[in-house]
Image (cartoon, rainbow, N blue to C red; front, top):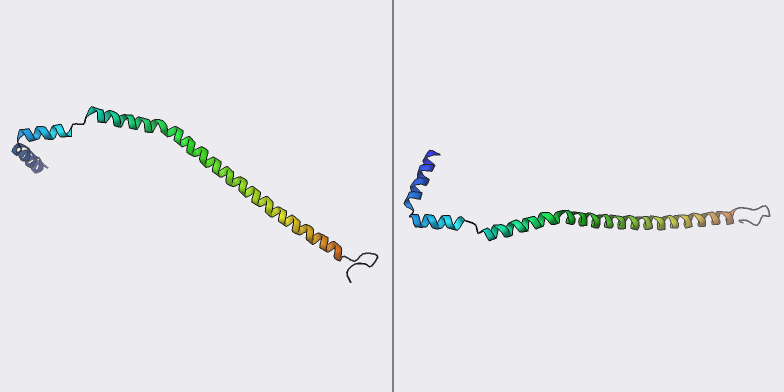
Length: 105
């Protein structure tokens, strides 16, 4: 590390001071830029809670919609099963022999 520091010092000494001052000035950041970045960061951080809640509401609405769609599908399937059971029951009633003998031949 000591040798690196010595090399850096030699390089710095070899560069004219006018160039050194330009490099220093070039790395300084304009206060207007830092203010704009700070304001942008503050806006992002300020909007984060409301955006998170909006995302939560959208997700809950979607989940509720899927839940209702699944409930309707299940209800339709149960109605088909009930209709099939009723049809089988009526068919069974028509095939049962009665006391009068008019049943299945």
